[in-house]
Image (cartoon, rainbow, N blue to C red; front, side, top):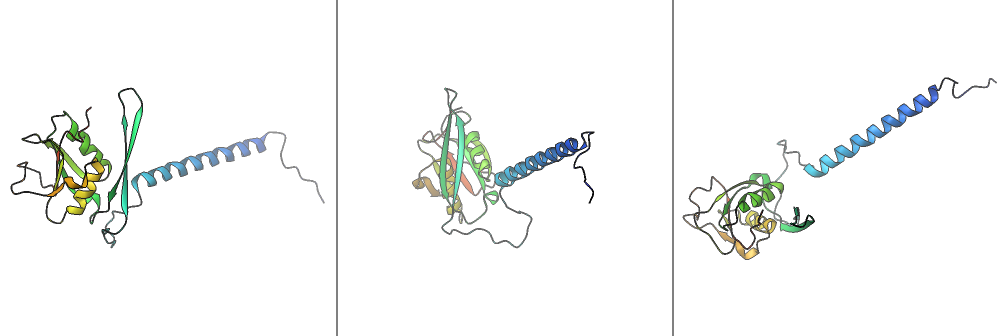
Length: 186
């Protein structure tokens, strides 16, 4: 029986082990990045398949927003919205600034975009005292989810009047008349 050496005196074992450790760390880093991307974007295939759209069952969506307070701290708000009958990316929302708080409609639209909605911001012709979320026929559940995402009460959800309070809602199914009750200053 011959005696074998497990390493040579030239340090090749250390080089080999160091390379393996580097590859292991790289593999872990790639796995963590992929995990973060999958969790952030979800497991939606959006590739067309034959997947049925979600229904108004007992599932709910939790939306979390982070804001920076004036003193430098941060504030986290989590809102649970009722499930809608359509995926959020199939619902167009027009957020009209009716609060007088500059930039608040853009911030509200950004909140809705973060939740997956197609949202645009604009100005309302008139100011309102409280926020109202108007919906076109068949979009009540989506409007309730949008109201919850923005922190508006359920009573704020109303059918769209004829004519709408904003002349051009750009094809949106849901109109948010953003009032000072939930408008966020810069």
